[in-house]
Image 1: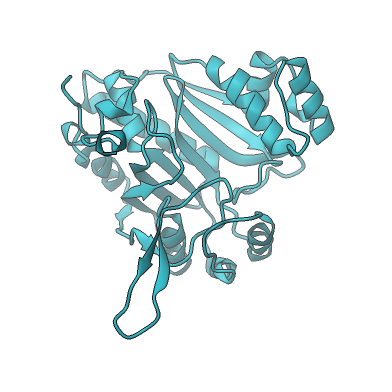
Image 2: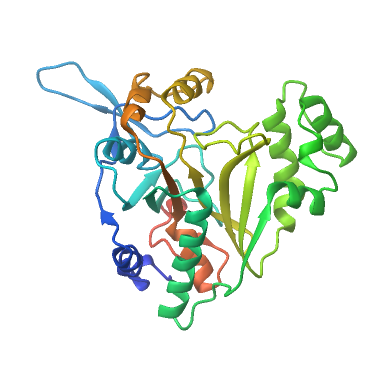
Length: 311
């Protein structure tokens, strides 16, 4: 079968969109000696050897975030980067590859909702420049609570405790471990019940994620929700956005409480947020976005040399 590579959809289309919006394109390293602590991610580790000094561990970045935020702390301007990203312990399958391409962008004085509208513009821009695009022309916003009410039959807002959510899981026939916390139980219900039923005929923006899922997104004041959304195209998650937390104390606490991670963390990283601008950051997986443009269901139809072809 003929492969539809990223080269078939010139990266210039993405650059063109952000250039028209006045965003500066930057290029950051693929290697870093430290990363943001994310216990849910497994990292590719390597070693930097030196002829005269001790060898040091280095990591292939799972996203350029660690570098882009350093840049923004000294240069508060709208930026974007199209970058290779690497995530270990990922299955090589129809929608996954351990090496993939991402566009990540930051907008000054934006909230996650401003970035949502910007992303709608990007999708419209792609459709207007590719007459054969299979991306839906319609966009839909749905809160996570609305999705759970519609597809799982209960409100997350009324099930904020771990014990309550485990009862709901049992009622749905979903097995949970005794050690499961609220987030683990949420993920079991979301992946098994909610996600498979999300509408596929629209570009879906799933908004207002529960605050019980710890991230670097700002909270929506006086609610159990975070200023975060994810983009689903044809039922496949391909984008993520936060209103970026900028409070150094809260970020320091996040680093301390993230749990066990298997990579090095710069515990002084929170200090860059002493000069960090108010902004929103978004990231879209280009490979999965191209799947939507082509109307295909396998990422191997996009990547020229998918990982499983080489193992």
